[in-house]
Amino acid sequence: VRLNAVSLSLLPDSSAMLFGFTYNPADGSAEVRVEGAPNGRYKLVEAADLDFSTPTRDPVPLTGVTPPATQDGNVAVTDGSGHATLQFNLGTGKNATFVRAEEAP
Image (cartoon, rainbow, N blue to C red; front, top):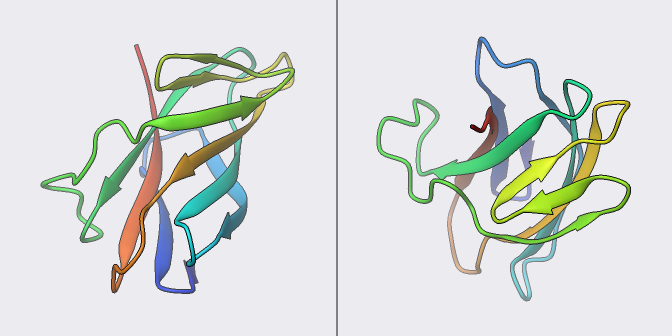
């Protein structure tokens, strides 16, 4: 999905899906909803291309997670239904960037 020069991608083997992405180009703030396994641990990874061979940031620093999901450093822990809403900052002035969710240890 390509939204306003920011794209979201999923790992082929990932059980997490990303929904409801928002991005503010003025300050770089972003939010996305992750749907995965109940009480699953997920991190966001950012890259300049879709193959993610050289991630720009791994993990993307989280600025918040909306309860009832929880935050453990830069890892989001989904609630009992497998949902989490993550807040983070992608910065400004990029032509394009790609973000995906990965299972975290």
